[in-house]
Length: 96
Image (cartoon, rainbow, N blue to C red; front, side, top):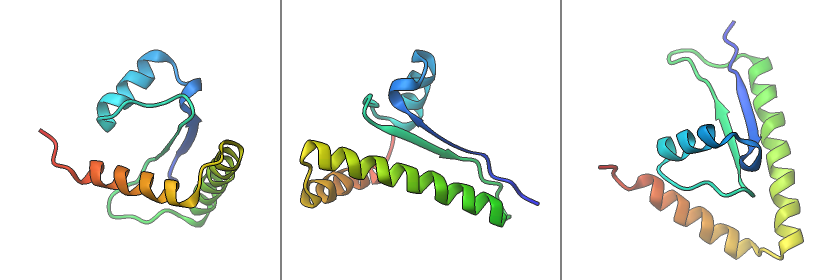
């Protein structure tokens, strides 16, 4: 069975060298109030049910935290949508 290791970590909890490495890989600066979600996938095979459940739990935790943050800081749905659109455009830009 394929198990897909999953990690969700707050940027503020990352060691400096790990944060720099992720910033280099992602091509952007990470902020302390962000979280990093990493999942290892094996090409050609689908994650088993346990890995899917684990991924869903990780996403649910992240969604709850981001919702709480948005409510606490008065971030509107329109602002969230604009940020997602901006991030999507940055990811789609070709890298040199």
